[in-house]
Length: 580
Image (cartoon, rainbow, N blue to C red; front, side, top):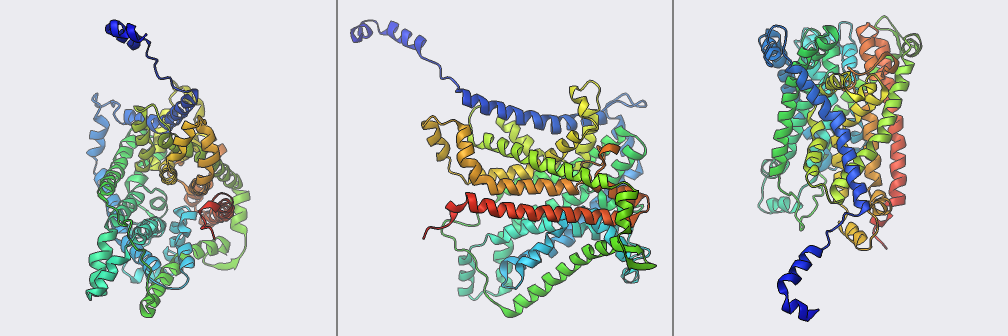
């Protein structure tokens, strides 16, 4: 054979070139590829399809203008647009300017002081996450409305009424505070004690350390928190609907055009305008995060706050004030739901719960919300986890992966109103094979899961990146199928994060309004939307009762999730504990 190769090198090379075997894809890899395609198809149906349908509706020629820009030209020429746009930007900027320093001080107290009851203050600060944004608006009506308990105080501050910009800003501050706080707590937790020790050795004052070390270290967190706060406020629909009065904003314009006037094309135009600031803030935040550098090096020393009695007392007093204001909002909603006839008969009874649940037949709404939240909590996390795992831990389909990553991040920049309106145009089209999903609970579940997909995806990617890729490499070398490694190694390690994602889906599905306000049906009424209907009918007491029931349901289920998470930590995370 060797002699033949020496005598006929060209022919031997040709034989070798022709007979070289092609590398075959293992059947287990094909399963992973099918999983990636399934996740991509789900996001395409639930996200890209509605957005493209929304674009097509907005650029459809009108009867007065054959061009594709007719609807835009018509609406952009109306004075109401500039007014609503100005109102939306004004309340969003003002809320951001108010909430950012308040949340920063609260986060600073939690991370840089030795004040007592940190856990209690942190728990109270997160309570608004368990309630729909409508709860704060309803509480404000009972506090400062025309027959509010503290109406004179509000008027003494120089405001004419709680209805309008002042009410929107105050209610939004309450609703978005925990979102801003969580980002800032994370930013302030990452600190290197060596910088502060060097500053102390140089005799640097506390004020100068704050402006030269603390603020620069947290600047990216501050920018991200500001972007998130602005986006949440400008896209929120519930608060302006309840306490906005005649103060129009873009979110309420979409609702009025679609529900009130049945003008779907103009509604699509406004929805695209509402999408623009959200996308802009998302892009700004993305570039800011790309420029962020590591705050903790391998030699960094964790910062442990020193005990300072005066400073700790000051921080405790500040946090207690914020916590009391939040509890006052919740307490007023609970009290109002129990009062017989505000403000003339303040005796307590359950008549508002009876009226809302029995007479108004809103008990089905609570059941439907629990069914929606339970479905999202059961179906959303597996989809998110499998999608994140297949993107991070498998190979192949390299052309699809960038598109899938984009689709996984895009829901963060799409307001719920925009997604819900797009779902109407997409699934209501008779030519769409998925037309049967329209006006079903399945569509509500799909829309909600897609709407909150990004946060769950980022959570699972963070958990997966903490796992050494060597697990998959060893499994591949031993010819162990990827799904067995997934089931025996990856899933147990990531189980606590998966439980947190499930709880996130449940709570948000219980409290969401904007994502489902266009999609619910009489047979699938939801509790959060029922609050709007009761408020429109003037039944504000039953509306408060419905909001309290949502909070109670979310709280009970969150406690069950905490117990489940504690069990998962004991059963699957024992390897993290140091051995003795």
